[in-house]
Length: 224
Image 1 (cartoon, rainbow, N blue to C red):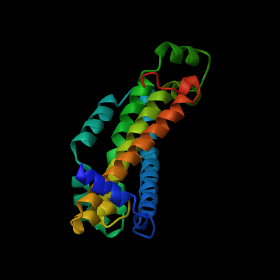
Image 2 (image 1 turned 45 degrees about the vertical axis):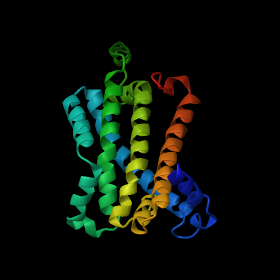
Image 3 (image 1 turned 90 degrees about the horizontal axis):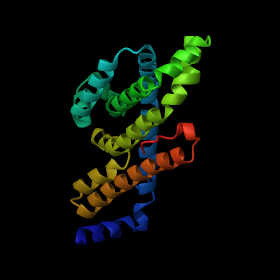
């Protein structure tokens, strides 16, 4: 309990919230890195998953990519990238590692969502003369959207938690608070940094939950 009390004391210290090393600045860096990596991941994974799901092919690819993404630690990927020429480009290794980590849930959930669309509805739409593009945009994607958004939510929360690795490569974010605590042998600062990351992840999770709760009925994920 004393550790938590000391961590709370550290968090409530006004000097720890301002400046380049302050919590607000590190939080901005963490949020920016998360958003950038999530957008890149979506641009990579969603078109591929939508195409495979529409064609009904590549299910094994989606599942295997998901398994590989879960099995390979993002830390290991980051370390390997730091040893390659990519390591020369600032936060490049961190972005690549985080994107590789976020792609699997996006790819898997989008593909599964597309394949779970009622085939009778698809056949009826095709029978009405819809082109493949119209079928994808007007029928399959809207019906698959709840699972697609679930994949985005999972990827976002994972990115928030994993973006702390940026500190190991000299980047910014809340991870710098934790690494600075280790450097100073300050357990309260380390615990405070971990609490900040956990709370931030919960806020992101809650934001997605609230967004889906107040979204139109056809957007909501009935399983949540």
